[in-house]
Length: 373
Image (cartoon, rainbow, N blue to C red; front, side, top):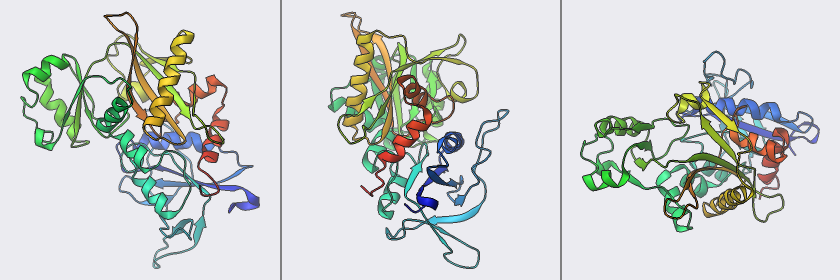
């Protein structure tokens, strides 16, 4: 261990260049508070919206009065690319590299592009640093809604009907007729138009009239040039957490939770998630024992199908098959670094399952493989 008095030194990395910068900061604030100072020496590292890495004091990482937190300045640092360095170099003015801060493990509490999509995971792999969460492939594939759907479908896990729009299909400068009449009839209304690689409902539009479609595609394409158009899947919104099991073996699944929208809220958008009192959470969800077992089993299957590591949150729609009356579980997303804010579902589901927030953070740090594995 490199920390003082044999403590594990954990670099908690947050902020970043994505549109989810502020939510990453809020998540990191909760993680920092949960790391036991008797066991860990914490190094808070913020990434500015421009991509600069800075040492942070770990304060002011909460939403207060509608104000979203942001990483702005601090002592500049850089990740050492040489695995022998095992850490961060301070970039002092007037010299290329200053003192070195070695770390044992990195907890990248980053959401969205340049953090949850395999990019920082690749950087950490090259630097030889153990880190919390999934590797390069699982992070990249889970971040991309198109490839999530493809991999889960290949594993026999149901997906909702959808169409992928690429640049050649007019995603940047959408043509009102980019979806032909057959596709529109198949998808029906409403549809959800989403950036393929984004989260926290950023860039998503619920389209209830095809006249709204070009503007919705432009909104999504401003976040990611690849756009996914999804048919609405009526039903209950259920989520389930997955954790790698200490010592290996099949991953564990939490008790599931349900998201219920308050009257007047059309869908679970960014404001409903983080700013408005627009939703209610049932933790655990009001499901039968059979339904709970089913969602846990599918969550584990999805975790393995995506080659995830450490943790994930699997989001579902639960509807009824009109032909048979049987439950129909449709996976909406797999999140390899789910929110860790005080109201986030992942820690709340595990608390309901018997794993407290500090215990959860301990398990995740341990899952990074402090022996370098």
